[in-house]
Length: 292
Length: 245
Image 1 (tube, rainbow over the protein chains, first blue to last red):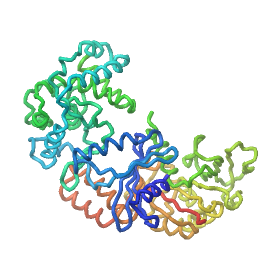
Image 2 (cartoon, each protein chain N blue to C red; image 1 turned 90 degrees about the horizontal axis):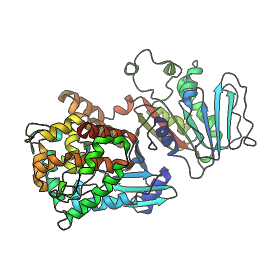
Image 3 (cartoon, rainbow over the protein chains, first blue to last red; image 1 turned 60 degrees about the vertical axis):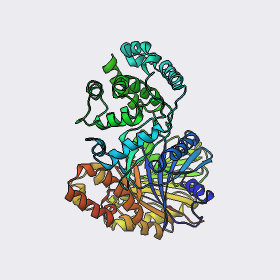
Image 4 (cartoon, rainbow over the protein chains, first blue to last red; image 1 turned 90 degrees about the vertical axis):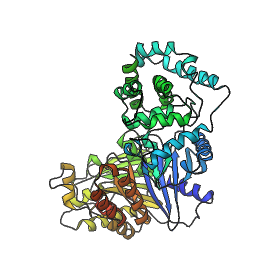
């Protein structure tokens, strides 16, 4: 397969056929192989390779994200298909993973914390002003139809689903969400926030969805964390203290955010429907505990 | 289940990375059951799994009648029973280290070079020899004194630089050597031992765990990364080299 990587890089004019290449390769538990390709004496490229589906949609999302968020998203360069394989090439961005300590604490206390609030403010520039409610209605009806068929969620969750209606999200702005805004997908490059993995970008526009996910990622994805986030009116001094400022940047009332947390979790469960069993079981457990 | 969820699936994906285009013929040489990588879905028209042992009692009969797959057992004291240039891919999962443990009277690196030469002879031009082993440059005190029974059946035969040299001495080209982690049975990452690539990979690992380190601990580790020391200390090696056309 590495011959395809070389072919893709040369056919797109990014490297010459004679270039000596170095590879750092990661095969994680998902379905994509990640390859950092270094050109001796030159730059680095990040290649994602998949033989199970086409990465064309992901490439389109990456391009849109780059267009909208500039240096906070990696720069996608090319999409390449050959036989079973689909490849995306992006400019590599040397970074470190973001940690809970980068974001927890007083909002804006760290460079990454400030960038995080800036990220939510930038996301708001792409809010849908007209027909936002209809768009939420459509997304939630799809999510409800999928979740209603899942017996594993238990009767309490299913009853809650049946009570949900337009007024529950009427005051939630429509802002395209990253969709998997967890610490693993955030990095720090030269001290600035970089956001990776945009494949679910815009799948939901429920403002606050990303804030909910990153808050849980920092606090710990558990029913206890969810309850605390729902109960605490002022998060100052808590690990998710940034959430209030992030909601403000998103034009979302913090009380509305707290009230909508179960809806965000249901939306997350729906968006993760094609991911591994591990995450589905984990979210199901949390939903059963808080709504069961 | 997602395709790379299991350790063996990730291992197979790594072994398939350098394979030449087309299905061709694949051979796995192993001494223990630990050294089994190829499975029934291995993408080759002919897959031969050959166990090297003290006794030879199930020699390979050739592709005829094997329905595209075959198992054999041959003595490591005998020449390999395959025609020259007959395989597109040869897999050596721990094989060189296991052979070094068998031929303890010889230097381990010499055993590795001799076997790589034999293996290169049965590899087709354009084909690849790909394998893994333990890194000989890793100090023993980092690995512990006793070792598991599996580890006792192996002697690390090559270090990061001697691995490169051994593959070249066997006549292979476009050689690439990597550190592998977290372990060779359920790997997630291979990082090139070339200085720039290695620094980049280990810098990422270090910086991503920085929160858990004291300031002096971080500085010491960062220094090791920038000096390129980590590649010498990492336990796993992964490598490949191509037979020239």
